[in-house]
Amino acid sequence: MLKKPLIVGNWKMELSHKASVELAQSIRKLIHQVEVKSDVVVCPSYVSLPHVSEVFANTSTIGVGAQNVHWEEKGTWTGEVSVAQIRPFVKWCIVGHSEQRALSGETDEQVFLKMNLLITHGITPIVCIGETKKERDDGGAIEKIMRQTEILLLHMERSHLMRLVVAYEPIWAIGTGSMPDPDDVAEVLLSIRKAVTMKYDEDIADRLRILYGGSVAADNVAKYISGPGADGVLVGGASTHPKEFLDIVENIQKAWDGN
Ligand code: PGA
Image (cartoon, rainbow, N blue to C red; front, top):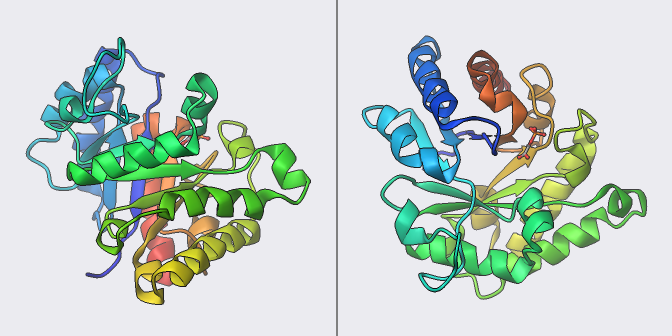
């Protein structure tokens, strides 16, 4: 299967339920102006998942994802949401986002459990990894990413790897407007692919989808896709503006076709 770009919009907790449904409707309306040659996914809050997935029910161009899930199938976990609860509404799910890791103390091991659970239930996990500013400044970025990648690949079956998406998000670039050098991003992505090649083979490493995330906008996205760049992006703030989000989709496709 030929690889195509993947663009994921992470709406975080930015919108009311009403605004989330309206945003979904606007994207649905505007998407016809773009020849979509990518996988495009939006991730609203849990409460809006049923309605947003209904908005996109009859379109094949936009998928819906959750922003998180619990690592256990069910249980006495007040306030948490299980994989079975999101499954009717999503094909995708973000896990290990740095904001969630910081908020709930989520560990790489828990992220690993979530990832496996999602794959078992036929949902594609979008697993976020990335370094802090201090780790980058101290020259420890690659080491941190390799450690996180190693945990992800632990006990991972080859067939499961084809269902996985990795999102490299330097934590210091999220919501700050301060972005990494595209060469540094390319170096990280290459290291992840090398680790996958070492454990499995080059074919599967090439097929693995790796996204870049952190302050992505329509006017800066191309440089992270061109050359040995990412297979797509995880977009936060800019994904809540329908026109900007679709411009990102278009600009990625242009950069992709130019590769
Ligand atoms: P940002 O967020 O695009 O607003 O920086 C990205 C993310 O948190 O995934």
